[in-house]
Image (cartoon, rainbow, N blue to C red; front, side, top):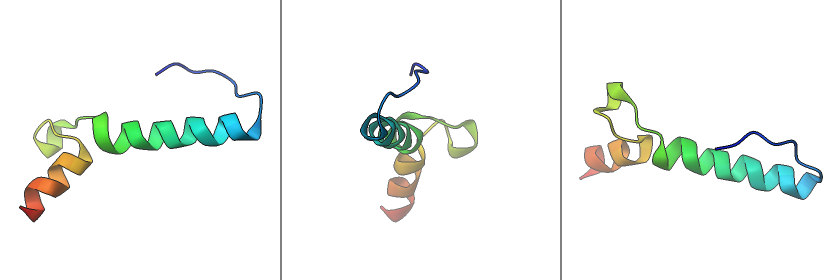
Length: 46
């Protein structure tokens, strides 16, 4: 992910949505067994 200053409010909203998606779906955590939060929740629900 790159850090850029959005020029419009719409660009800011898109950047926030992209970060939330990254944070929940792509970012792995050691304490979750090197899984993303979504992968961890899916494993628990299975």
